[in-house]
Image (cartoon, rainbow, N blue to C red; front, side, top):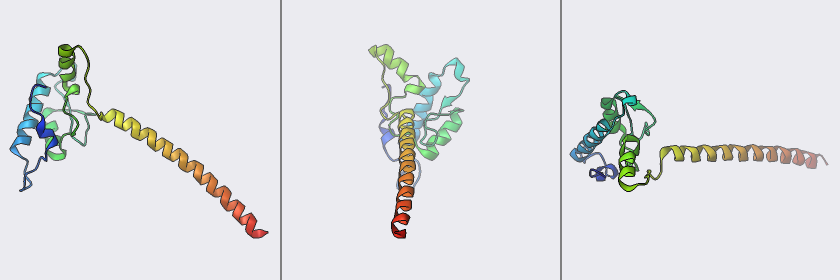
Length: 141
């Protein structure tokens, strides 16, 4: 990793509820790194790794800075692979590195869990309806 990333896991606010200098310097270092590694097809836009955007949206660097200040950076985004670092690490080590807890994987898992939960609920709703019908029949006898 080319720079210190310890600021990512720390609270971005000081006791007076202002952004810490360490956080602002970290954000500026990130933005410089992302800018330096832009590809032509990015058209001057970079992915926003704030907790709200989760690297899903390409934005002007100034808007990314606002997002990082407002929402904070995703705490697991310590290898800036979506901003060119993966390519550098792969060249150096001959292998690929990825972030643990990648948002795409998390969203996929959450989607599957929600689908399974909804499917289970539909099953139990049917069981409940059947039990209610059986109870009504039992009471009639």
